[in-house]
Image (cartoon, rainbow, N blue to C red):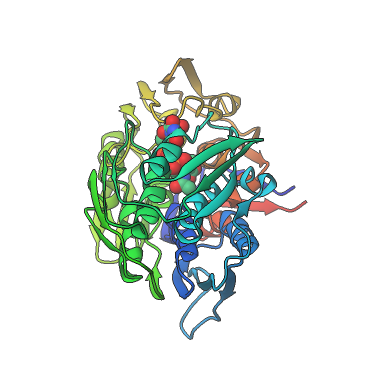
Amino acid sequence: MDRIRIVGGNRLNGTIPISGAKNAALPLMIASLLTNETLTLDNVPRLADVAMLKRILGNHGVDCMVLGKRSGQNGMQGESIELRAGDIVDTTAPYDLVARMRASFWVIGPLLARMGEAKVSLPGGCAIGTRPVDLFIEALKTLGADIDIEAGYVFARAPKGLRGARIVFPKVTVGATHVAMMSAALAKGETVIENAAREPEIADLAACLVKMGARISGAGTSTIHIEGVDRLAAARHAVMPDRIEAGTYAMAVAMTGGDVLLEGATAANLEKPIEVLTQVGAEITATNRGLRVTRNGNGLAPVDVTTEPFPGFATDLQAQLMALVSRAEGTSHIRETIFENRFMHVQELARLGADIHLDGQVATITGVGKLTGAQVMATDLRASVSLIIAGLAAEGETIVNRVYHLDRGFERIEDKLGACGAAIERLSG
Ligand code: EPU
């Protein structure tokens, strides 16, 4: 298994190209199931999760072709892929695939909407919490599906097609909003989704569905209107830049000091993290090429932050912020409200010398003068990258084990950080 070795202490200076967003690419790829025509996606990040989803979609009959490079493209740019679900050959998503990647549960919506049936394994728990699927099931029932749960599988049927309806989510959920929107795009009549997730990835999926012929308005707000259509068609869409990757590198620069341009990052998707980073002591300016992050050698200030659905502070940046403020001058508090168990990084950060006390959903972080390199274990995607951020500022050598978690969501992290002066390398095997 690969490991990452870091020798801390270097400042970061240079340019980091921001990849396409994992959490937009996944639902966009799944949307290819809604039509028998070709969906072309540009700026698709080269990630383990994307590769896994290609396999899962292939199982349903989706042909996936990676388009060749064009002149002027370099290795840092995302892939262009063509997805064509000419015939859906299988409406079952088996346990061994769904258990490996939770978002693959989302195929349930498009399969049901297009084929009138889907049999999808329950995803099971994951490292960050129990993550139930009750809200997906309620939403699909509201759209007229019959649902049975048997032997670990959700059987969804709507032989006469789905019917538009009013879906009111009792809690904000990104995944069930994606699924409700994709399903309603092919339902008969009008659907209104209330208390919808407002994440920019929802708006990105809606923009693509509209190019495919869907009639959707309001995506990106808490009320989405969808007028069902009979069929969707070919379209071409570029995946939005990854706001979580951008926020992560911004925290890395705040941690080490330096001056980095996050190429392609947009401030509009990062307002809250920018506010928090500014409080901590980084300076972030929007330029026409992306966001420029600087910090001089001054100390970091502590913060009190609560994770919330967008536009609040993202849970996907919580671990990284915790690593950053472990070096602040004073005490910070971070409350996690989205996932009940997203604190796996706490014990690993402690191995590097961080002083973190957990009380239920609140972490109290007392800043320490220095972190010291150590062997640590990656436990989930965002926890892994928090260890990298800490390692960049720790004295001596940090080895991060189980790097496959990192490869699920960060494209060439060692190349991107290395190009800005970090002493970081991948140790194979
Ligand atoms: N929830 C339910 N029932 C449901 C669905 C969700 O109780 O049927 C709960 C969840 O357990 C959680 C909360 O609702 O407590 C919010 O979960 P949500 O559905 O919004 O999360 P998700 O769609 O499973 C996506 C991202 C996550 C990100 C969350 C929150 C993708 C592929 N995943 O997950 O990303 O943390 O939204 O923003 O888009 C990551 O990239 O590292 C990651 C975990």
